[in-house]
Length: 327
Ligand code: ES4
Ligand code: ZN
Image 1 (cartoon, rainbow, N blue to C red):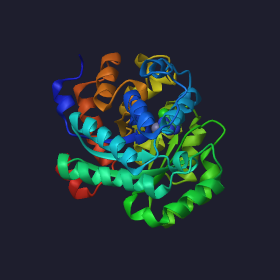
Image 2 (image 1 turned 90 degrees about the vertical axis):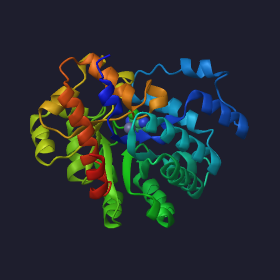
Image 3 (image 1 turned 90 degrees about the horizontal axis):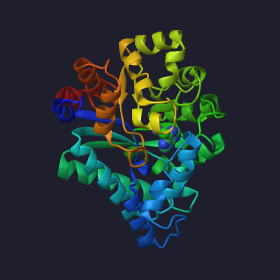
């Protein structure tokens, strides 16, 4: 065990967590039963056996199927409370939670139902566990920019409960430029802006996320190591990368965790962070990501561990006073 108990106990922020990706197989089946939703899997075990992914798309197909059990405000609440309780056990003191409204509105679930459940869970978790949490609305990049604009329109009444927008789902073939206008509008509205880029996609998609979308953070970004000029830019401008090692391993972004680029990113002075992405699907929550990555990469030091936790606060959109208190 290369993760010192010290690091497990270190306060940290989680900045890359898709709340629909925190739905454990047991909760998927419990909600399916509660809501009378039919699943194409006979049992928890059969569903779990389907979690053998070859790339991002092979995961997304199953992830969207899992999310189909979410219908009512209480479902979104229960999912989010379960995640925040689990995150608190890993000493996460602040989480910035992604959600995918289009996955739900396409099934006839009102955006209000989604936001009400997620937000009520964040408020109750803060009151009862002392964990801070905020919400980032993600646009699905495999859908059109018009669809993203329609989603933003539906979200207008709830913008006081959303700190920013992101861009997720199938990356290849859907470059950041496709969403230039809707992201410009979001920035005008005062929302923070992040984007998945350089997960499977090329460094050019990271440049696009920075130059066209004006992303303040890059989600994943692990392909940046292929472009030295981009590495210098990310380091100089202190653009954080929200790295998700177990996700990258399970989706075959790297052949093995021992080949992950996290150490190169840190040594180049980038503001890298460690996160769980879709913990119910990728085999671990944030401390599992830390411990398995440190076990696989002997070059990572205790100093790196401390730096990663420190980076998570620097990279967060929390108030400066909160960041100082946590660090
Ligand atoms: C995702 Cl791992 C990953 N990549 C892109 N989009 C996503 N949505 C949920 N998980
Ligand atoms: Zn992600």
